[in-house]
Length: 291
Image (tube, rainbow, N blue to C red; front, side, top):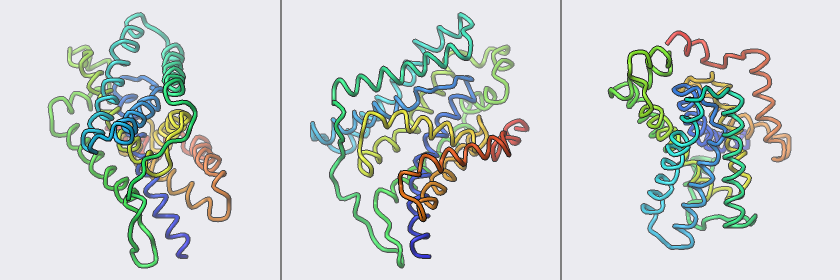
């Protein structure tokens, strides 16, 4: 029982990071209808930027976090402005835009390999330390992961409900073409959505550099996890994406109780397959259509 409780805590922390990635992906998809496969490239660039700043240049943590956030937002907004918007103006197909997005992820991965090589990197710190809550060990990294998810997803929820820009983004989620007819869903709001969605993945980029370390392949992995979480929760539903990410993190960690950790990807995509067959709309998919 203690082992299961420990695995649940680990899964909740991992799921919190997946939730942040999934919510960012869902926000971008719901507002712009862009299947942003390069979402993982955002995390990859932010993570290595953070590592370079804090471990190599010895910057203070606050400045390193600021750099990671700036990289993520500039990359996300830049891709929307310079790649996706011109393609939409020429009525590029969904598959064409997806191929471009996939190409961006490949290019970003190879740029990282060119600069940093294929070596494994991690940031040394005391964040791996923690404390006992009863019989369960909770590390500082795991606490930060869960706190980051609560704060950032909560802040995003407040923003889209309490601000004029957020209301327009919500309208774009419901019916982007209709919003465009009224002159509200212009290019600026697409870039805002990409900026916010890209910012959501920054805590995952930073905390991964402390917990499991950095490799060039992590961009593709987090992309697949974000997409899986968004689909399990209900594609385009922000709260569903958060719930889907949490579910995947908990499922893959509890699943290794009787299996080796190498089974984690199989468990994650096994859960996704079950949802695609049994409930393809996802956990909160119906709520998306009614909102």
